[in-house]
Image 1: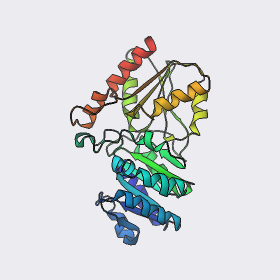
Image 2: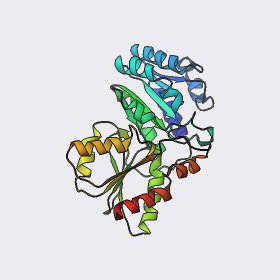
Image 3: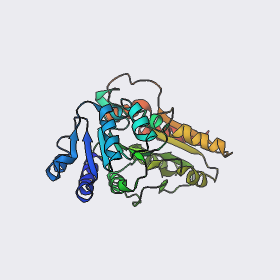
Image 4: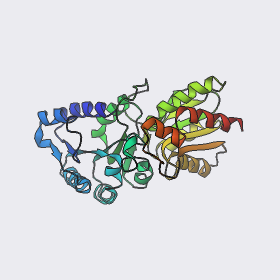
Length: 304
């Protein structure tokens, strides 16, 4: 995903002189093509992420389209006040790009884990959260960034994610990844790959859930989700994120507020820190959101 982002950003950078790239002292080799094209529009702010967001707000105020790049927790938690006031309150258009969503930085530990970003940022008005699952989706989001009417947060994995054949085009509502008659699994971001592996395991047990992917977490998707879940089938959410402020809580609240009676289960990261610095796959297993755990939890849920 990271490589796809920089490749597509370079294409946009060459076409649109409003685009400016800001980094918090990381990713040098990745943005080398940007430097070669126009070094005046590439700024290494250093390890001063909060100042970087404020600088980006000023650039946006002057008509530029800044892309601000850093590791998820450094960009979100460390800069929350600046995102809230400099960007959202002042209604500036800046694209925040967080690399390492979820446990992607595995062995680096909790300082580098991005497991609470969506919950925190979704409390802010005038901020659109993009949650792609594939490199192809990342390219689509970057391509359409100039059409934004507010700031946005793009949550990336890292690299090596498979490029699934999902519908492309202008980023929008939920995507039906696969059909099925035994309930629904809803997810966002790169955990979709584990969900699809889990679906293959469930097929061996005679269960065929359909899968919905949310490439964008925005209030506008609620109506579409309610329509898709109107059949009353069991629904389980899966996310590489803590429960608080996550998809499970948001969708559960949406169903309740609209009087929808649907058997519902939410699968998320436990409310505690990992007991070791696991690699990504091991961290997913520890959290109970790897393919095997998802399949087991779903089977128990629908058979309860």
